[in-house]
Image (tube, rainbow, N blue to C red; front, side, top):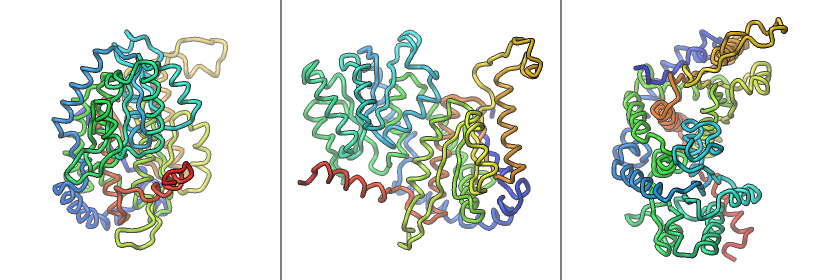
Amino acid sequence: MDFEIRIDVSRAKSAAVGAEHGITPAELRAIERRIAAAHEDLRRERAEGVYGFWDLYKDEAALSDVKATARTFSEFGYDNLVILGIGGSALGTTALATALKPKYYNMMSRRGRKGCPRLFVMDNIDPVTFCDMMRLCPPRKTLYNVISKSGGTAETMSQLMIIVGAIEKKLGTEALADHVVVTTNPRGNGAPPSLLHPVADTYQLKSFTVPLNVGGRFSVFSPVGMFPAAMLGMDLDALVAGCRAMDARCSSPSLAENPAYLRAAVQYLAHTEKGKVMSVMMPYADGLRDVADWYRQLWAESLGKRLSLDGDEVFAGQTPVKALGATDQHSQIQLYREGPNDKIINILEVRRFDRTARIPEALPGIAPLGYLRGSTMNKLMAAELRGTMDALKLSRRPVSRIVLPRLNAHTLAQLLYLLEVETAMAGRLYNVQTFDQPGVEEGKRIAKALMGAGA
């Protein structure tokens, strides 16, 4: 199918870069039994509902609610949509918007945006940035979506408190229901209460829920990502179809058939057998640059664990690094080629861009530029990508590729779903708990104490 993304790990194998740095056929064969056993564990956990990211795209009730709510709020004609959230509450939406909306979307007129609001993702608590957003996004013209499963995220709740104060001051308390949407934990059935529940009740706010068995970094296909996507006019049905297509491809334990398991095996073996302690994701398309940012959290927070599932100290994990082609050919490739051979490079490629930029017969007096005249930037980008991969091969640096035929909602969903499944399998190979983040919680506790919490 021409809309199916393709995985190519040939340049990460020993035949391309040698047995010291590349995965051998024997190593892939040897790991297949572990993959098959882990596959059964993952299937069982999925069937039992232990971890729910797998089936978010199947939740028709949630999707219908998202669509209906987006239609209702769109009628208000908001100029701005502001996301209040951090980490998994923000990175997925940013990745979707960067990939599926125009590069300079926020600078377009409302007509150019087809009536959709501008997007501002407040994924940090830098006071200068937040105050700048407040000046650009007056409450009367803005819808705020606050996202926190527990409602106890200090960064997000401090943002919400400022927003509530501003709305009450300028529009009145009764206006909050028209300007704030909540996304948080469900109620009851053993779910821990969220501090956003009483906020929603007090001000009668529209609320979405994130299933209790879905962590933030795996939540992009829940209302966390889908409501902002709907407000921005993205094709939710195509996102669902992309998830469904990749889910079908990931149903087999076979490395030959399951692209997510193949990538997990190659990344794991590159780290544990070949010393590739870093995993670089390098898209050759501006639209995919924030997928690399989203992936950094997914890979780092899921696999970076001190303890194994058996309770042993293992200090597991591979450090994810983001880069951008061709930009970082001029800043990072020197290190990747001639520095320590401790990285596997993951190339994201878009085979066909939606537009063509033709290079005219300009600057005729500069003879060395003749090779560019009459060509296209598209061809140049493809040549830069191929040149980089070939140069990395000469330096015996392993490369894995993911090729998207086009960049659209269907292929993007395939890519994100693939990386989620890959991470789930990698966690099994490392024998760590993929879906928690104990190393994050201690810093939160200390920060709250410094702010006087509990005093």
